[in-house]
Length: 114
Length: 140
Image (tube, rainbow over all chains, first blue to last red; front, side, top):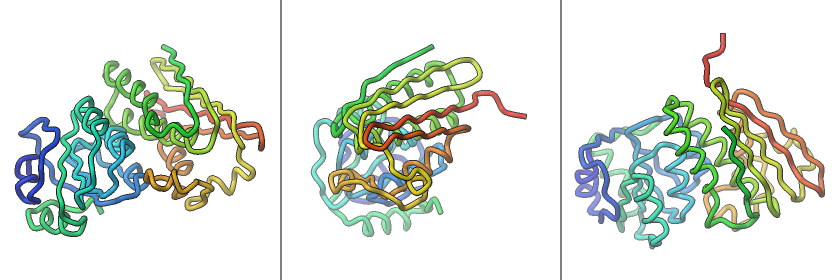
């Protein structure tokens, strides 16, 4: 799925767009950034999280995650948007729960990392 | 090539800035993306540790053709029992650190997993020194 397909599937809002044709096939759902930092996936991974802080974006940056979905309608700060833009990270906000978002993406063929 | 960064304890807004700068340099140097991710993750975990636990610290990064060498020296409470601190799940992190998505006791083991050699020394009540390196050339 590309960023626009992901956004449509979860009824979200794209806050920073990047590489519209980039394909994503895996997702990882976690509010614990320490767990995200243990992943061994180099490309095509979506991070689904309810943790909305600058460290969420930093974690994505360090882990080579280029698409982040902030679930549960958590407020996204301007600094997060700025950091996401600077690092070519697509940032999507949506009101569904983490389970809701995960289910919709799973239905669309997005696979778990493990 | 050498870089030095100053890290302020407790400053979670800036945590990751130094690691981000290094990652950008590594990208410019066209280093293998897998090695860049391993280096960036180790640097970031170490930087977050300084922000989470110390008053202040310094990060020195030296990039040569065959390795990336990192030294982090902080002024802070130090680590009482390094062996215990290296165990997955052991943490003394505050609630603020946990609210940021860290403090699960996974940082040090994750640094060790991502680097080729890691040395940790600490003087309780004074500070902690961490050294690690990442080989850029495949080892025999």
